[in-house]
Length: 129
Image (cartoon, rainbow, N blue to C red; front, side, top):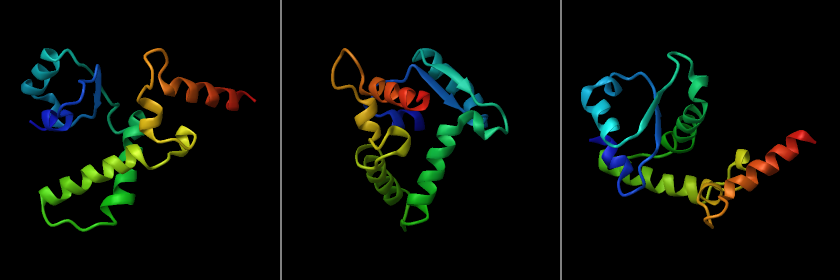
């Protein structure tokens, strides 16, 4: 199943947000979420702003990657997408993250406080001033 391939050996999410594609209405999908104890959240139909972060990611992948490269088949595309995902999370700085990469922000360096707490605090102080 596609979900197992995407998750791979990563930690399972606590929540999963998705749109109203018929795939997500299947008995198999709902059973899998229940067995894995993943809470589901669906977007508001026909309102992309309800999933603005996902829409932004799709737009970035389309502009920065899909419109810029050639690929020969599904295997070639997957290999190149995996490399782009590494770049996107490990090397590409993000304005919304104060010039940091997602890995710098969301992968905690200590058990006490994840890095993103400091970024969020700094953002709040900037907006309040």
